[in-house]
Length: 185
Length: 185
DNA sequence: TATGAATTTCAGAAAATACTGAAATCCGTG
DNA sequence: CACGGATTTCAGTATTTTCTGAAATTCATA
Image (cartoon, rainbow over all chains, first blue to last red; front, top):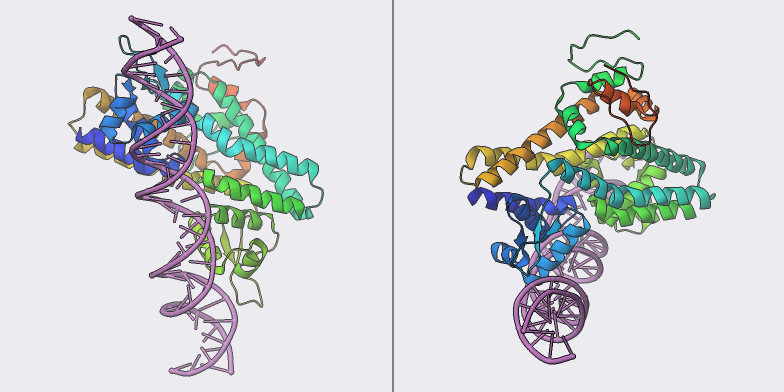
């Protein structure tokens, strides 16, 4: 209980840094730690928030796709839980943050490049450069997002796979302090 | 001008999603688009914020390491600019966000694993699982952060490098819709 | 289609955050 | 070390965001 409480309080505090509020953070944390799905009343009781606040919070978590509805037999009330698989959670988180924090800016930059011919040369160049970099990073992300969870996990656990990755591009990139054997290409 | 203004307003609006406020977002955008370093007075005048607000904003941007001081000859006032290299900016952004949004949670999880033996089995398992995944992702990030900008950029531009990466682990992971030739291993 | 439990909506209260102007501090120069 | 421009601090105000309770709505069941 002590541990669970601290975890929940921590998520509440971090919430604002993560772009959700205290309530939403705590609700998420509570669901994350509970094996069985919980209904809104359970959450109110446990966290001491008003019913309406919990309702809002659950709505937001569903919009983030971080919490899903679950049917519990013999109970009319809706229940909620977080996905079991952590990798799924991480993927969702990244996807949603990209959608909220990056996509709108990419659209705006494209729009400004097309419509706006009135910026200074320097400003135009910077906007284009930024748009290009965001596109490249987005493409990389989309490649990554296609790799199945199982294999991504293997990759993650394998040691210094990264040096191999870079080797595959035709160059050798020594890792600082590493002792990789160099492969001539 | 029209274009610059729209860019600045957009950064102001997005600021709250990015964990900075409107003022800070606008100051950053203005500096990002200006070739010459600007002093606080320039910024006040251009954006219409109070002197003290601009001072706070610049302080915050420096704490994020997104803006640096620059000396301008024959002017006693401090001037500021964003780094020229976009890749540097992206690295800094990721580094700082990791520091603010992930590191504190990783510490807390470790602490809870050590101190807290009172959680339910399920909760303990989830905390451990989460701590492990964050560590793995953090390690991956640290590997990536060591690759020099020049080479990272090459990598980013190269096409479907990712399938090669995964091949290097000893498996072939077909990209959805891709037409990579499979390499037997 | 009337009932009532469950859920959502929403206007206003409470809390948190951002912003300002005035005063204090800093700092190079005479 | 006094002057004066540049910068920061800070207490109070304004704005935004979060939270609540009451009312409205939804929806399965009789």
